[in-house]
Amino acid sequence: MAETVLDAPRARTGGALLLAALLLVALNLRPTLTSISPLLGDIRAATGLSFRLAGLLTTLPVLAMGVFALAGARVSRLFGDRHGVSLALLVIAAACGWRWSAASGAALIGSAALVGVGVALIQALLPGVIKHNYAARLPQTMGLYSAAIMGGGGLGAVVSPWVAHQSGNWHAGLGVWVVLALAALLVWRAVPGEMPPAASAGRGLGPLLRNRRAWLLALYFGLINGGYTSMVAWLPPFFVQRGLTAQHAGSLLGLMTAAQVVAALSLPVLALKSRDRRPWLALGLSLQLAGFAGLILQPDALPTLWVMLIGFGLGGCFALSLILTLDHLHEPRRAGELAAFVQGAGFVIAALAPFAIGWLRDAGASFTAGWLLLTVSAAAMLLVTRRYVPEGYAAAMHGIVPGE
Image 1 (cartoon, helix red, strand yellow):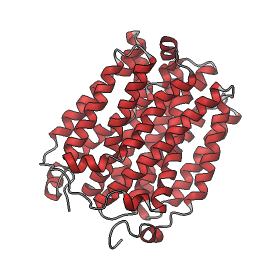
Image 2 (cartoon, rainbow, N blue to C red):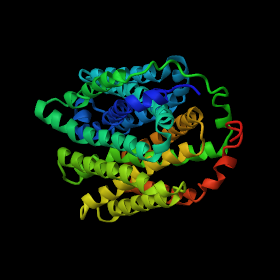
Image 3 (cartoon, rainbow, N blue to C red):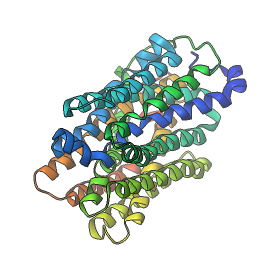
Image 4 (tube, rainbow, N blue to C red):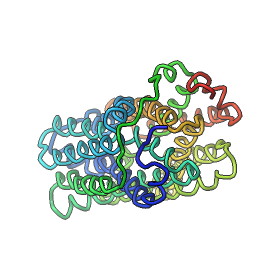
């Protein structure tokens, strides 16, 4: 079997540093998205972007995450995981550096697309790395990885408006994340081991493209993340419109992210006793439904409660949906390719949600129409969840890997 980052002996000696590196890299995957919406008023005032075009600052990175996630397996084969992740971190750092001086809406949109490329490559590579090195502790490790992703999102929502306020410059709030990207690069490069280019899995994406379960997993993952990207893009503007300051609205997004972190850490651990992830996925989706109902019916009454319910539901479902995907295949490299495919197609779907809500807003609808759209999506996913019976994984994945 091809090496990913560490072979078994190195995993025992360098596992702690590898885990630290994985988590630090994961922290970089969301601040460049969540830093936008708390500063959207300043950005629109300076650049003249409409709501629809401003939505591209969130939509384009997510769309790029989808399109370029499918290149992750090829990058791994060509360069190996060490160099592939290093390249992606450099791309994220370059995009953040660009934002320090981006004076036009077009430049910001370009930086958003560049961010998405870097994030996509990392998200395509790391699940396979985790499956290879932590197969015996997959739910716990994926929970930590997911929590770090969500934690990074919370940092973006809280730190960026603070930096912008302290410096008097919204560019600084967006560009400060270059520091985190370079720090992660240094730690990642310090992980011991040779990490040569990984061997090809042999059959490419063809079997995945023809597999119904792979597409169903992608749709499921995409709709879950459509809720997240919509909250990131429009939750702060929604509450600013209702009279809160940008910093207060950003703190609500940070609170939502804190709830995501708690869920990403706890629900995978609670799901350890069984390979059947359905009860916990159903719990996460039900909590989302309750939170969206609160935003629709009584948004000003208990906003903290609503955003925490949504955050807990989103965080738990994100972590569990990745675990669910990896559960379907035993061979780490092929499971990683399935995860890359699911994220690739899924993030293309997720990119449409904030753009659709921005379009509705420009057309004269209120944000409530967007929350209704997300409510219908979560209810539909509750029905789909019933399909994921563990005893049916092998049949659903027939033909993907010989013998599975």
